[in-house]
Length: 227
Length: 190
Image (spheres, helix red, strand yellow):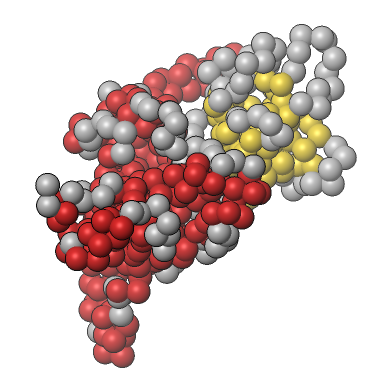
């Protein structure tokens, strides 16, 4: 077996690329100096090592806020149809209920006829050790404010998930209601809430203890920003 | 599992679900790679709203064309980046058309400056960064300390309290892995 045919293991070539010749025996050292194939591999690995150093300078690559909602909307065609139907039914039901009834909001869609106008959006980021993510959209619809919330990776808690609007003063909050089992909810809110500073959307894990106060266990949170 | 890459079948399972039309898989895929796609677009296009648009188009295109994805351990991000290259190129074409419409002679120099060798180098650095971030421990820490922070293998072995041979192995195999992943990204024909 001629020396030129027995290329050292690639891991050893990587060692050479990193400047570490200690683990090569004399034959291998000679081989890598004369073999063009090995030289090419080593040169390529050196370039990768240089890139890896540069990679250290890269700042965190965060998913751009607001883009997921747009992707989700564009790829949920069939869901949009279902929602159209549901909101017609719910709108009819809302007429029958006395004021303050549950109003099924809709994610604003460019293709649908909609009287509602998006005012603000929030991306909900995981809070604490939870992995919950989601989004919220606040719309004005004929004098009401509608808040649509969607959250996923809600974790293994068994109680309901409540949605709050926390004031930017950090002291006051109001409850909007509870998410459904699918992590979604559509809520109606008093029109002046946003103007009064209630802009932080918070999703909390609650328990069936009958205590209306915030449990202190937030799953996700985000701030509504005007669009 | 001990290879330094995330549990075998992690990306493959995700891409299988994605291809099958599981919308949750699209969301997971977005959370995992949208940052990289956005950073690539931003680096080439220079404007955040353009990068946002490209990012959106990439994932929507990926979803609508998901039957073209061959699920495997490594193909997904490479496939996404191939789509991204297309969408970025489309955006450049739009800009050129806009510029011609405006007939601003002074801007023709700027149009040529759009793609340079320097930019492609940075794009590869982004990809490498993403792959390093996806390594499992302890390989990720070894690779970060060795390549980002320039520690010697002895220093790393000392700091992490693992054998020097293990550090060298992670460092070398990590380098080989990065090379393979980069090759896959460059090889995927759009």
